[in-house]
Image (cartoon, rainbow, N blue to C red):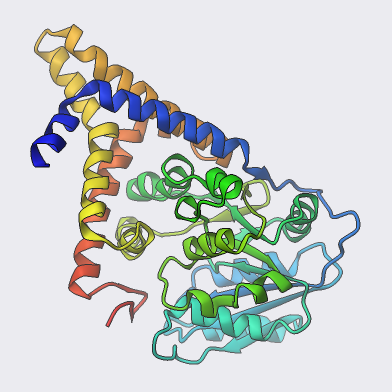
Length: 383
């Protein structure tokens, strides 16, 4: 098996066939991504909307997030934020905002019960407080939204008859690590997973979603058993996509960059820590397939840059031809994803760096989860 793997890694023809398949899968997935646009409003469905925000140590973000949600252009909308045991002043900021604008509802979260991850438990508490809302719209505390975001979500769900919608916000990228790591999330979702296959054929293992803006019709959320169904999942957004697929519910991924923005991480340390938390569980949590997948990704998307440069430096331009074609196909995937999700165009040229940075984050994620030290914002994720 080791020899077969080594031959596969050396075989440019196999890599080129794989990359061509990735390009085809990317085009198919992106063709099914829907757009959220300012000014879109539902025609007949006028739901009572509850926007639900779990916030743990989000002092740098929560004021801007809450203000953008309170400014939504929707007549029947509640904004509920849960302070999930914050230690950085998030709770104090929320109470101040609540005094200034009584429309903001603030909850104090309870510690997670045994068997629950922190975010699913926070979201479950928020959903219980949503009352008779027809549309549950979960938004991360590091997001900010145009006034028409909620209406655009409702319009897209009405138009598509959707039970669930995962919207990918525009990503504000600071440090180099943010620039290379954060875009891996929508890139992996549309290049190596296949929401299109999940939605067309009901193939749940191919499903994937992004939880930064995740909306459910209330009856669909109840049918899925809410966050209790994903209570032990660190990547609860991925789990919801697979569960919705198995249940036969209609759902889609949306490009939300015209109505929402997100600064997911601040600085290189936080970016690597965030991917350390997410990568291993999001890719199934099995060590051997995880290692092989990342080795193959490095071979296909990072190694050709080094191999092509080495061939040219040695005066062997013909040997640089295959790596150059591999680089071009990899760059095409980044170009397509960047254009669809409002990401920087330079990612088409920085794909090898993103693959290398992602592999380093993957190694950290594997080590943390296997050693039982995975944590996020001061909370252990495994016992």
